[in-house]
Structure formats: C-alpha cells, structure tokens
Image (cartoon, rainbow, N blue to C red; front, side, top):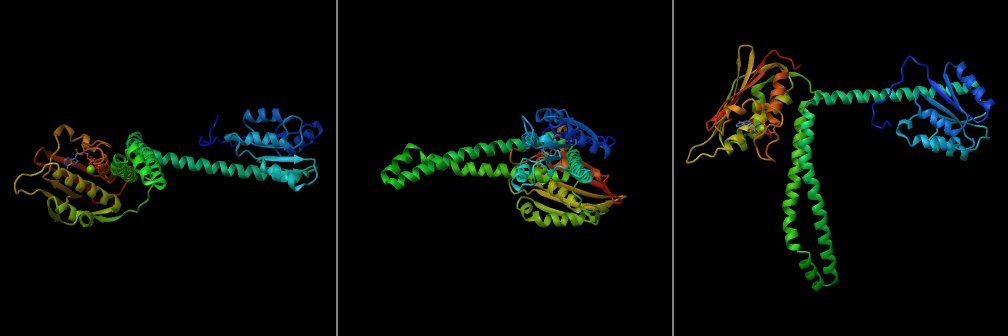
Length: 409
Ligand SMILES: Nc1ncnc2c1ncn2[C@@H]1O[C@H](COP(=O)(O)OP(=O)(O)OP(=O)(O)O)[C@@H](O)[C@H]1O
Ligand SMILES: [Mg+2]
C-alpha cells in the first residue's frame, strides 16, 4: 500500500477526471451521473458504502460524492475509513444529503473528513463548480508535492556516492550517544532513589548509597557525558562537511585571491598552529576570476588542520621545531597554493586513497576522512588539480592548481 512518503502518483494529464457517485437511491444516482457526465467527467457509481470503498480502493477515482444516509456503511463511515488510509488522505470528498440544513450534522460530516457538505436538491451548476474547485485544489497540491520530491531527489543526487558512507559514519556515534543516554537515565534513577532515601533519614541515605554503589556510578557519569558530547560533535562535523558536497547551496561566485583565503584562514588558526610548529608564509597574489570564497576557505582549513595533525603525529626529539609552510603564487594560467608540513608523511601506497571520502588513518573522534575528499571536489569543480608529494618521516606537500579564469561548474 502507498505510504505517506511514497512518490505521488500523477494522474495521466490526458485523461478526464473520474468522479465516483455513491447513493442507495437509483434515481438519485442517475440524476447525479447525468449532471457529472454533462460536465465532461467520467462517472463511476456505487449503490452502497462498502462497494464505494472497494471501488475507490481499486484506484483511479479523483473525487467522490457520498450520500450521507445509506444502509450498511453510511457516507460518514465510508469517509472515515478512507481517511485512515494514507493514500486517500487527500482524496476530495463531497457529502450530498437530503437532510435539511443542520449545523451539527454538517460539522460531523466535515469532521469525518469531508471537504464539502451539500444539500439536495442541488443546482447542477453549483455542484459542477464545487467539483471543479476541489479537483483543482487536489491537482495543485499533488503538483506541489511532486515538485518537492523532485527537489529532494536532486539534493540527494548532489550528495551522491557518499550517502551510504555517511549513514554508516553517522550511525556509529549515534548508537553510542543513544546507549550512553540510556545508561545516564539509569544512573539518574539511582541518584533519585538515594536522594529520596536521604530525605527519609541520613541512615537510609547512606545505606542506599552503598547498596546502589553510588560512588562508582557518579565516577562514570563525567566520562559518559564527555563521550556523548564528542559523539554529537562528530555528527555535527560530518554534517557540516557534507554541506560542501551539496550543490544546492547557492553561495555566489566572486573573484577570490588564494592569498586572501590563506590569510583569513590563518586569522583563525595561526595561534593554534604556532604552538606546534613554525608557520612560514610566502603569499603572493593568486587571483581566481570566479569562485566560492567559503569553499576555498574550507579547503585551506582542511589542509592546515591535516598539517597540524601530521606534525603532532611525529614528535621531534631535542630542540628541533616543526614547520608548516603556506605559499600562494601564479604559475602560467593557474593560481597555485601549497601547504607543506614536516610531519609524519604518507606512505606511497596510501597517496591515492587519502582523497577518497571517509578514508582516514586517524583514531575515531579525530578524523572523519572527509577533509581531502572535500578539497578535491572543490578544486575539481573549478577545473583544477590537487596533488601530494610526501615522504614518510619527513613530511608532505599538498599543491592545488586552479585555472585563474575558472568558473565553478
Ligand atoms: N599533511 C598530512 N600528513 C600526513 N598524512 C596526511 C596529511 N593529510 C592527510 N593525511 C592522511 O590522509 C588521510 C585523509 O585525510 P582527510 O583530511 O581526508 O581526513 P582526516 O584528516 O583523516 O579526517 P577529517 O579531515 O575529516 O577530520 C588522513 O587520515 C591521513 O592519514
Ligand atoms: Mg583532515
């Protein structure tokens, strides 16, 4: 059965709308059918509530007109049963009754899920207009949902191949967040019990504390909270990085100088960097005609963070000091940026893999493995290249080269 999130079935635009008329009086049914046919609708009929439901469930009915009083399942009952099924939540339904106007009955009909509550005898023109208006609304609604689904599908395509990996990456921290929360809930219960015992008497309080081993429980709480927070932070980072993968954000293109991007990245990071390494800058103008500044900012940040982590991974003995160098320049038609470090280096066998999404050699909680994948995607969209040169135990250099006249594709 169709679920609420299923793709919307779009009625073939070429076919005429099909209206189901339901009445236990054959004469009424005939009049109604004639009216509707004259208005150009396809008409289906049913003589009682249950066959009306069966006919609607068979599909292809665009609107139903229900007599209220019928033996067996009456119109209200039919309407309620249909509304319980997600695929008929939005089916336009008109009640048509021989009763005299009665506010209470009308309210009940509309509460049962009817869209209109009309009285017999009804002028053909009025009925036709009500039917037309409801069908028009239903079509607009269907179209809107279809557009939303298309937009959604495009967004997913933008995230593309990383989606499956993302689910996995997010699932890990989420599962320990959830399991930590349930431990914390139990701990909280213990604490409440002990507190209640203390309120009764100090002796009971102490006894309860011992019984529930409160001391070890409390010692566990801090690390549990820290771990949970780290998990949340990790999910947040993954989501943040993923935004770069999505093509739907529409940051505008502007002229960007890589030297400026480096300067602004260092504004945020230089303090941190210089506590671990000597920061060497050689920033010549390296302008690009049209790019997304924010994305380039993220590229430089990812490279700088990697460099920082690489130098941390290879502590120097003695008085030696690591260095992290950033340089920008133009080279022929290209703007070039290089980030070098004297850190751990990368084994040759891994030098291709490091650009793949989720490839990381860092412990859980440190790396997500998205940094270089993001860099490479941003650079490739600008028609540029990213390369690495590295020797284990000596350091690495990442070099980006982007055509200056590039426009992001
Ligand atoms: N400057 C570097 N020196 C040594 N190894 C590096 C360097 N930059 C990247 N790497 C290696 O490449 C791997 C992938 O890097 P990437 O930036 O894509 O992910 P990460 O740093 O592990 O995690 P994230 O950037 O998502 O926090 C790293 O785990 C590391 O092994
Ligand atoms: Mg990284």
